[in-house]
Image 1 (cartoon, rainbow, N blue to C red):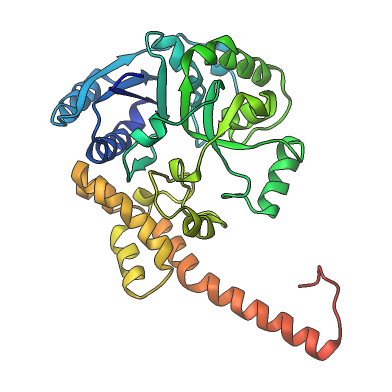
Image 2: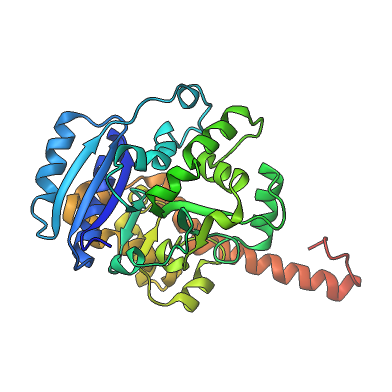
Length: 329
């Protein structure tokens, strides 16, 4: 295996700043040499020049290159949910744009590395095309899994994994025609896929085509089971902000909530992002949006009170009006 770790990102112009945060976090926490490969889904030349200049200061980043994917008409016509773009599918075509690479770590731009990614790089794929972190049992509770099963007709025993972090064996990925099979599925399905390429991969690929990786490599911090999962994992390598986005909240609001002792786990996970974002642009990533800040405060303060009152009311009703049906409360 090469000493240089090859990492890939897929993004368009609106994610250029988020990429810088992710790239900085990886470079800062990884001792090995890094080569960055970008699938350019619509990045301006000005932004590319800024990115090259930005990564040039990292001693362990040996190179960065941009390659433009061949357009797939099926994807251009596909009804993508508003918070996504067709760029999400091109993570499955990285091996086609960079065929000279044998192994690649793919990262979403809303991730940060908080540990050395060399550990992920050295994971054994056991002859499979890729490795991914399964959400079931790590971040999906029974209710969330049931909702996903109903939404996309996912069989009960089928594996469902998150594609925000992937370890890819490029040769196996090509041999198994992963990209082509997912595109064919998307082309022919009548299902409304809320996480299009992720849902499609879990539905159309066999479970034995991927290796299940530790959640420490793709830790989604603000899901229902994440705090419980964190206690088991303890040491994280990559945090993936797939739910609440730190840059959409407000750093001062989050710090205030933490100082007040509100949801210390959640606030700590959000504040971890700013340790790297401030290096890129403190003002841009700290101000956030007042609506998201108020929503975050609601979750920190009022939602627990609401849940407490609900439990007390439920207990009162059971105590004074006899046994209720399980679904009543």
